[in-house]
Amino acid sequence: MKYRPRTFLLELVMIAVAIGFLFPVYVLVTLAFKDPQQIANRPLSLPSPPSVGSFGEAWRSAGLSSALLNSTLITVVSVLLLIALGSLAAYFLARTATRLSYSLYILFLVGIILPFQLGMIPLYQLVDNLGLLGTYQGMILFYTGIQLPFTVFLYTGFIRSLPADYTNAALIDGASHLQAFAHVIFPLLRPITGTVLILNAVQIWNDFFTPLLYLGGSGHETVPVRVFAFVNQYTSNYGLVAAGLILAALPILLLFLVLQRYVIRGFASGLKG
Amino acid sequence: MPAVLVYAVVVLYPSIAGAGSAFTDWSGIGNAKTFVGIDNFKQLAHDSQALGALRNTLLLTVAIVVVQNGIGLLLALGVHTGIKSRMALRLVFFAPVVVSPVIVSFLWKFVYNPAPDAGLNAALGAVGLGALRQDWLGNPSLALWSVAFTVIWQCAGYSMVIFLAGLEGVPAELHESAMVDGAGTVARFRHITWPLLAPAVTINVMLSTVGGLTLFTQIIAMTNGGPGYATDTLSTVLYKQAFVFGKFGYSTAVALVLAIFVAAVSFLQIGYLRSRETAA
Image (cartoon, rainbow over all chains, first blue to last red; front, side):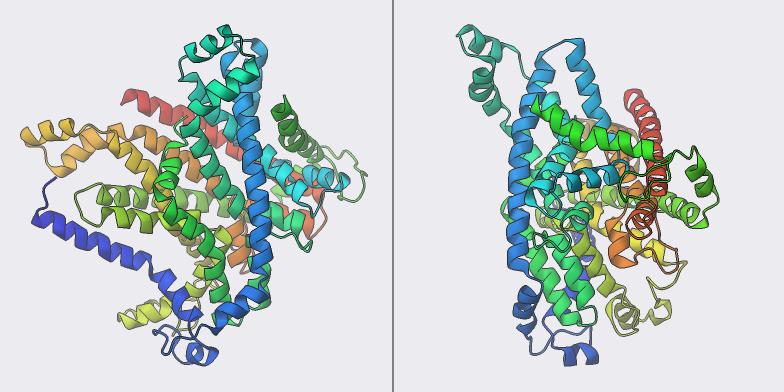
């Protein structure tokens, strides 16, 4: 495409849109770098001189270091379980043509449109009865189950598009089904595993409703639950709250910048089915 | 298969149990449940808070589906061009998608600060539009739209990348030959791009519809359903009925209504949008 005057005009328009789009971020950043006196006098101006005192205080009073550890642990273990269980289940569903495997596939599809609110209260009771409220295990079990239909759906679609010859060749060479899966199929699934990993990780990391119910007050709270409690505690201290929000958002934003191509591709391709 | 077991424990059993307790007076303490038939649904039909929440949920969903996807499409068309900043702009517009909705909601509470010299109001004043200053979240007839706009701001980039994937599948030769035939930008969009975007439209409409119908986090973080009940949705009502008022049976009845809405809308949309895809 040639760069013409019209292209330049469009470039200016799009950059103006982006600046407007970033206005909320400007509000947040200027608040975080101002002391209470500056906020009271001129809330929207640039901070002069900038003060960074809010950041250290926010990090400590929001308890962000342990929240980041909790979130990381829950997200990593859940995503690994989803990849292992989801890919194996999908392999079975895509490669066996029995009535059972077809019904199971439909059963998983139902789970995609079933809003989790329907089972929310019985599940809460079940997790309570198992003694898993407030634990990592309870959250990991929840995420593995709730994200499984979508994961199975993505893997099944992808495996069906692979030629069956690969596995058959491995089976003829005397490999067991599980060996054929681990050594031949799973490596072939890399593109869709990337998508599964990114979509599930972002979803689990940012989820709020269930961790609020299961982890509130347990000391194992994830980042969104800590942020919620922190903001409600320091509502009127704008600078402190703004600094806390920035610190809480930074880890995933940095990860996004590092993996930008994969993340955008994952979000764009994952839902084609 | 372990996958089926986990799925059954976490999704199937609780959903069936939930649908069942919608017909009881379960208080959530112990297992004391009495079958009350459709009493919960009769109560729902006369509960002005729940009916208001239903109305709010539908309004929010329509606003989000139309505006988010409209903006997403315009952004995609804008960055799917020869402009030099196109990669950087994609990053900017997509970045909010990966951030927790809780954080985005609190960020927008600063923007919606009712004080005349803060946030959006200050910006309006600075560009000479001081007359448009509002109490964005405190005004009952405005609060719902303020929340909707926060969701749209966060998710427009998601629609954009799905539309972009669709645009990349439109063969450039089609545009070139249409240009040779003298077709203008608008005509080419209508007759070439738009029909070929049908699958992307399907995905975007489905995703934003389900997202809108089940909206919870942004409401709890920004308004907690207020002022009054002006921004309550089905999700916030069923949450409050269960965990604030202890009416678990009634809460699951609201959840069942929500589930039926999501399922019905999903089926209708899949049917309609798929037929559009094949027609195109």
